[in-house]
Amino acid sequence: MPIPPTMNELIEDLLRRIKEGEFQPGSQIPSTQQLSDHYDVSVSTIHRAVATLRERGVLVGRPGRGVFVAESPRR
Image (tube, rainbow, N blue to C red):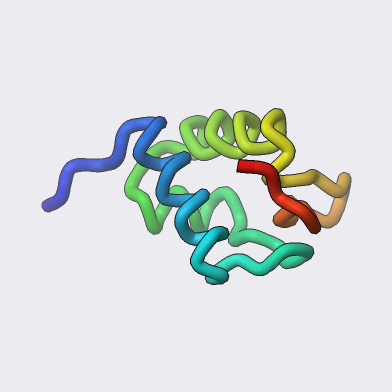
C-alpha cells in the first residue's frame, strides 16, 4: 500500500493536475470525499489543502455549489 502524501505533496499534485489541464479553469474539482478517497488522506487534510489553494487564489468556493478552479489561477 503506498504511503499517503504529505500536505505539501497533496497541494503540489493538485497544482500539477490544474497546470496539466486535468482540472480546467472554471471547472469544478472533485468533492472532498472523492479527493480523500483518491489520495487516501482524511477529509480534514483535503479541507486544509483546498483552503490553502483558495488563499493562493488558485481555487474559488461557491457556497452551495462547490469549489472551482479560478479562471486565471495564480501559481
